[in-house]
Length: 70
Length: 382
Image (cartoon, rainbow over all chains, first blue to last red; front, side, top):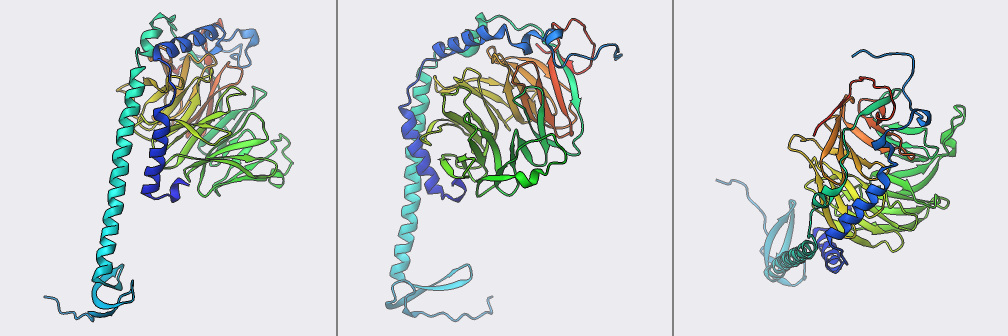
């Protein structure tokens, strides 16, 4: 448990982690960014927080019959 | 002038080696200790040696950290915003408050949507996650939720997880038979609900773990955690291994959330920024911040496509970020105190925010509704 560890133990733990991570396989950002963008664009047509929700399918449609004056 | 007299033994048995030798008189927390000069020298040398190990460990860490940074930099051939220039612009958002839920008599600290998509579970003071309860007693308990008011919920409570310090987060895993908890004791842990047995614990944070999120895909078997050591760590659920670690934040990480595709995650921090980390590129790919935002971010969530990132802040606002282009597309007012938690509904039609002002607000995009209500609450920023 980190709370019970001494400074030296924490340092050792961090060092072990760094040793592992130096050889982590990586992909270029140009490729992953494009993948992220393609994934997002494919899904954004049906993203209701971007497109809005049609009234007939909206569980939270605004109350009708009143008006709000601001 | 000192007018006190001390009785000091100058020769006799050493407290350490028991040999009769000339003694050095030493006080540790007012306790007199009589060590011979030889033992004293040895003690001093040991102290120096441990200082030496700390120093060499630190140096080795620093070298490796630099190497890691270089390796990550090599593949940082372009910025996400640059790639996203080709992406269609979002246009103006028009987020509207649809419901304001009052009823709590105290700060709302936590909320989540039920699986039936329409109901919300929220809690003040103690944290209630769908069917779980994180007490202040370092325990995590499971309650069967019921709308029947006469039912005695306390009688059906089941204690599952136990940490040595406070609990900060918990979630059911995809199997529903296990829960995953994060704690101020610096660890996360996986528990079996039925037996209450600890299945796996996750060590790697050097301070309190404040948040966790499970990977969205059912085969993913990873989760990400964030802590007050400013680190976000990615873990393998099965092996307990810390597979990736990101330490670019300048302060506590309050919330982490997987990108819906599972290939990245976002974080919210007390350093008043939110960031996006790509797991395949193994690095931070975007920072969502503005000079005008000076308060910490407490909670984040993505819209279903991952294009929008909603973030709740301690300055009572919610900022909506364009994940790809890295720009702020809207700032939402309405809450009268810190926004503590924020979640997009499972069907993606709305998002709900909980606040220290004792209320919850459900908001949606107002486009396509047909009727334009000039309700206050949303201001548009470029």
